[in-house]
Image (cartoon, rainbow, N blue to C red; front, side, top):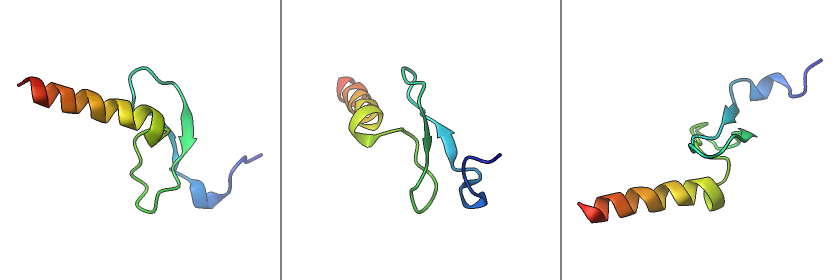
Length: 56
């Protein structure tokens, strides 16, 4: 039994954040989404990267 149809093959992803274990369906047009949520994991990753660049 399939939970999703063939149109979502390869779009089930794990969040790229080190501290997140969520799995999500990538519904972005390009299929390159990295985080489960931009408001949660994506924002934290971008803040960490910004602070690391600012420290240099």
